Length: 205
Image 1 (cartoon, rainbow, N blue to C red):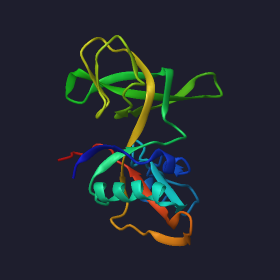
Image 2: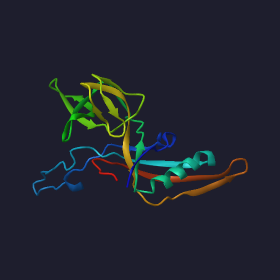
Image 3: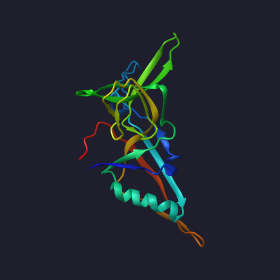
C-alpha cells in the first residue's frame, strides 16, 4: 500500500453524502434491566465516511474517474479527498501540538468549539494531515510537509488555510453501469454508491 499524492476528483465529490463518524460501545449500546444505558466512546478521534454517486456522465467526465480507480487499486492505496462541507481552517482555529515522539516537529490541528449554557466552551481538536499547498499561512514560521501536516523549524504558533482528508476506497470492485447511449456524446456511464473512508494513523509502504 502507498499514500498517493492524488486527489479524488473534486467535481465528483461535490455532492458526497457523509461526514465525521465515531464508534460508541462497539456499535451497540447496552441497556440495563432498569433502562439505564452504559456507553463507552471507543474512538477518541473521528473517522470520516462518505458515499459519492457518479450519475450518467459523458466520456470526458467519466474517464478521469476510471483512471483514478485503476491507479488507487481499489482499497489498497490512499489519496486526498475534498470534503466540501469542511475544508477550511479559518484564522483563530488552527494551532499546533508536538508530534508524537518528535518535539522538534509540530502537527497541524484544527479546533472546533461549541458554547455551553454556562458561558464556557467545549472543544474538539482534529489533526490535519493533508494541508493544501499554496493556501496555508503559518504564524511563527517553519517548513510545512504537505503530505503529513507536520511543520519543522521556526516557532509555529498558529495557522490557517485549506486541507483535504486522507482517505481510501471502501471496495475493491468497480460497479460501473452504462446508462444509455447518446448519438452526440457516446456512452453515458454511471457508478452509484462509491464508498470512501477516512484513514488515520496508518503506516504506509
